[in-house]
Structure formats: structure tokens, C-alpha cells
Length: 502
Image 1 (spheres, rainbow, N blue to C red):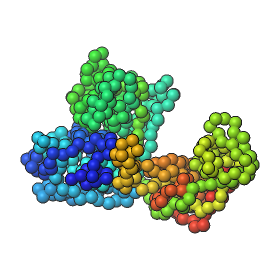
Image 2 (image 1 turned 120 degrees about the vertical axis):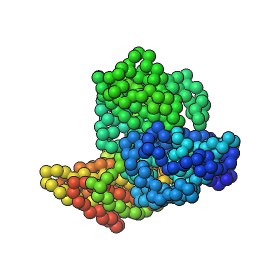
Image 3 (image 1 turned 135 degrees about the horizontal axis):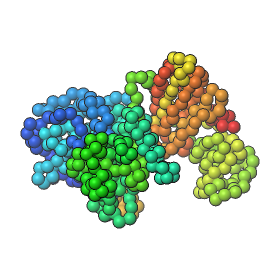
Image 4 (image 1 turned 180 degrees about the vertical axis):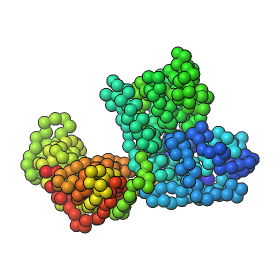
């Protein structure tokens, strides 16, 4: 049993919230008249169990609010009576499938221990959770995660964040407009709420902190709707627990009589204790950690893909002139010093002198990269219409760390903990003018950018593992309003990219 529950197959990690089952039972034993779904799929069907999969269930809530029919297509084949289900997933942009039975963990009362549907006769929620955990090797690997990554695993695409900035704090309506536009584009949205003073420690289902407002710190919520009515800009969210809601203005308490009949009609407000709640954009901006989005691509986008490997070895450079640091976040060096490069951009680079711990910024034109191979791909676009520029989305993706079942042991107590760290990768795009058009980097699964290709032309795409520990990668380009070719150029070197930065 422990092999399907825990990362190291023997015992839970130091902060594992996966509840230990009392036994296992088939869904058909738990509920008579079992079916995969009844009357469609809805966010209100989803309830979280004793495992930290709120990110997954929040993602499912976002999907059901925007694309309920597409969720059904995830089930390729199934037989409820026999209790076997084939579920389709997207791994690194390619389709695969997982086969699971309906044997589920239960508590001492024979009730489902993990995710379940509001209607016990519906099987789709626990089956999807089980299949997702099997894809990622065990339940503990899915004990915490990112909603955008879960959505990607169902449909592919790219993800990002609509950050709450100072201007939004001053004018929340601007944030509402950005979020509403994302929703109208069909992007799938989730959010979290920040912890505040006065939180009730460890009162959530999996030990989360419950805030005085009824919200849960660090918990993932689906963003279902954004409505502008009668001068009020409102956001509708749902807690995947199926309970536990916002208690401020526009909550079910209706303390200010804000829920008039006309506002109920404009929003579809029902006032049920189902985990779904409304709040003003002002309150949302004041309490949210921002909105995570996932953008999927339909048939109007043409996809091109290359599979390759990063070159091993960290990026190094040799200083051509001495540099004296002028700020605390800079590093200085003598002429001829070797530097380990962690980030390159036009102007300031970031790294450290080899053998020294201090890291900081320094002028990129003071150093010369040590020559080494780099992955380069040439993108040539041809717009369908001369007056309509084509668009391209370029993404650099490395394998999902959540599927590697790595763990390390804590020095403090010798207990294990799952290791989901990523190497640092960098995506650089050089335009037809020979200059760097965009650079994206980070220690994460995927970095991406969107380009406009007016008149097409040659665009050079460089993929680099900056710390030299990256392995396999996928470079994928989606194009629309035109056609394109994507060709790998062998024998490319870092000096080519450096020349474009000069």
C-alpha cells in the first residue's frame, strides 16, 4: 500500500498530508447506481478529501466553468460495471493515457478518503484524481502543486500569472479588466489568497491556515466568473472543499443588503453553501496573490515541435576588463577572471566569480563567453495576408519534475521530502534585425513568449541550460494567421547569441 501512497515507497515525507487509508473499496461497493457523471459536469460536483490536491481540483473547477464538454473527452474508454477507466493526459505536449480501476482509499466508515463528487453516484471526480496521481507515480507526489500545471496536463498549452501590481492596488478596475479579458479569451483561471495576521493555524482540511475572512491562505480556488453589473465589478470563486467561503461584502451573509433581486439576476447568484462565493474586485485585489492562467491552443494554431538535449556544463565567461562594483547587488572582478553566469540579458548580467560565493550583477560587455555549443532553431514565418501580421507562441519546456519521484532527506530529522526542483533554463529569441527581441528564464518547467511576425522573416531561437544541469527539452512553436518552418541549426555557439546582445 505504501508504494502507491508515498514518494520513497516506505513512509510519508516530513510535511505529507496524505491521509492513511483504513482500507480500499470499489466505487460500486460504496454507492449503488454508479455512473461516470450525471447531468453533465459542474464545479459544484467537486469536493476535496484528506490530501492536498486543491491545485488539481481548483483546476478542474476552472475547466468545468469554461469547457465542461472537453473534460468529458479526457475519458477515452470506460466500463463502470467492470470498474476500469482509460484517461487521456498531455505529457510534454504529447498525448498519452493512464488506465485505472475503481478501487479507492476509504476511511474507517467506508467513505471515500480523497476527492469525491457531491453526488456519490458520480465517479468522474475520484477517478480523475486517482489517474492524475498514478501518472505522477503516487499520491504524495500530488500532495501540493500548481493548478496551471494540472490544466496543462489535461490540455497542453502555456501558463502564466496576472500579477497584482501597485497600479492595481490604486485602481482595482484595471485588474478586473485584465482578468475579464483573459476569461473572455477562454483562458482558465485560478487564484490563491495570502495569509494575514489573525489566521487560525492548521484549521484547514490539510493543515492550512484559515483567515478571519473565511478564506484559506495558500489554498487554490477556481475563478469561475467576472461580472460588471450596476457599477459593481465582482469576481466569483469556488473553494474545492465544497464549503468554506468568503464572509465579507457580497458574501452569503448579505450584511449590507447588497444582493438585490437585480444583482442576483445579473450574476446568477444562488446563495448556496457550496464553496462558491462572490467578492468585489477591491476586496479581491486586497487579498489575492494574483490570478494564474493557462492558455490552450485550438485548431486555428499550427504546431511545430523539436525534441533535443541541453549541452552539459555551466555557462562561463572571462572578463576582458576589470570592474569595480558600485552597489551592494553587484560583483567586481579583475581582468582575466573566470565568472559563472546565471543570467544573461542586454546590459547587465548576473553571476559570481568562480570560487567565490557572492553573486551579483555586472556589465555584460565587460566579459566574453567561453565558447560552447548551444541549441539554436530558425523560425521563418510567412503571413497569409500582407496586412495581417502572423503570431507565434514559442515555448521551451523541460520534463515534469513531479513525475520523477525524487526525494531528499532533511538534515534536521532524517525524514524524506519530495524533490521537485528544476534546472534554470533560458529562452532567447533574436529578430530579423539581428537584435535580441525577447529573453525569458527561470527555474521552472516551461518558459514561453508570444511574438508578432510582421512580414515573416528569420527569427533565431536559442535554448540554454544556464546552470548546465538541464537534460532533455522540448521546443514547441504555435503559429496562427500564417505558415512557418522550424529548423534546428547544428554547430551553433554561444558567441552567436552574445553578438546579438552587443
